[in-house]
Amino acid sequence: MEYGSNMQAFAIAFYYFSFNDAEKQKVCNFLRPLLAQLAAQNHRIIAKVEALHNCYRQGNPPIDVLKATLRSALELQGEVFLLVDALDECPSDGGVRQELCATLVDFSSWGLSNLHILATSRREPDIEESLSKISDMTAISIQNNVVDTDVELHVKSQLANDMKLKKWPSHIKEEIEVALVKGANGM
Image (cartoon, rainbow, N blue to C red; front, side, top):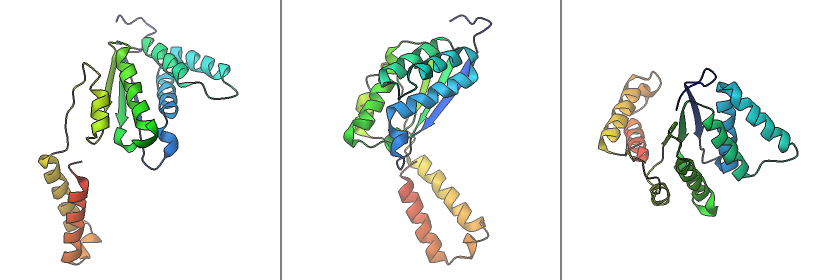
């Protein structure tokens, strides 16, 4: 892609899914902030977002229209890095997670060489299966014993050095350490 004088060299957009916020888990509420973040970084995209807003003043645009607008915005941008955190925070029931994963597969099917996506998730079979459809995807597991060791070292350090925590009885600190290290599950 050749960058003209109006083309931004790169843009970054991110989204974090939260298990306790059902609204944030909807695909439309994932796409809109991505568009807003890209528009904030490139004035040429603002016009596309404004046109979308003007067409749907009385309601929300359908997901396919949001996707098409996002694709169009991505084509006006240089390198784009999308960071999508905590896919596993979306519920697997009701098709929400499946729709989200299908959306990420759609992104990859656009064949935009300037689009780079980093998606994080705990290992979930449905997510792995859905995203396996992305031909150039590389999965990197961060759930492992090295991470467990880092978590354990951090917890021990906090329990030993925090002014309030170091006053607690040792058996309570041991319970905290065990619970946090096991609960972290390599994350």
